[in-house]
Image 1: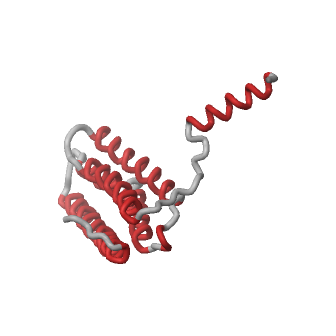
Image 2 (image 1 turned 120 degrees about the horizontal axis):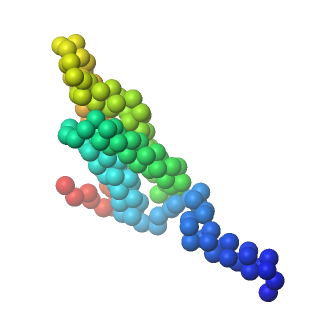
Length: 166
């Protein structure tokens, strides 16, 4: 075996062990596995969102949590792009993608604006009103996106012959 061949074998082994092929499509043979995969994406992003909203600690710690939401939502959006819809299913993955896209968007601006107000040294009535406005909008949008996921997931489960636990 010559040195080039050895080097090629070693490089291929390293590439395989490090997940070199990160653009490989992902498919599921089971509706429940597909459902669970999407639910895992939703839960991971949702947990990062809840943590980003937690008040406590320093301004820098809050901003780090928002940055974490951004990274987690970005990674999950990339993963969803590789997902092959199960039996042509579109609504569940579409509503999941919309929710995570929204989380990614607010992690770039809205949450920072909110936290800046929370940590303001001289909170005025106008700033307090703006803070409440942002919080109300975040809450309403969250509910809107999450309810679309629930409807789509329920329809997918019914079509696929399984039920979702409450």
